[in-house]
Length: 194
Image (cartoon, rainbow, N blue to C red; front, side, top):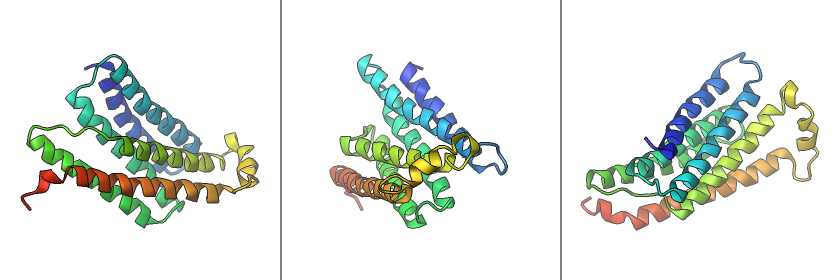
């Protein structure tokens, strides 16, 4: 297994660690730990793509698993933050629906011996989703003793923490819908027998 694929597998386990850190009641500094784990996982997404392209280590495993593991990480991020009340559940449902749609198309393509790689619009979507999740994780961590100094900074910023967060969520949601529609339209030939 080459290095980019090892990073993809590591990101999967980091996603599980993020869920554990965010979900265990009474876990000390849970928000801070979740922020660190999620940030490292998000960085591995950038890193594995860079290494794969630079060293020409692109594989079918990477084309399939890299975006799938990204979906697991980001869906975990949005579900947990929704549970904490940062945005309504319908936003998460739309995000999850788009991810299931794209994964379904990839499975159909795989059954026909094709591999559908990620598209540019999907990468922008992923970038804004990561930024949005990290932003809300910073807000969550700011409630803990290690980051109490940050809470007044966020509270007294010009836009306010929740207004800025809502702007990020709306941008991420718009890109999620646009990339899902684009992906489905470009690959509509996979479902012509319906």
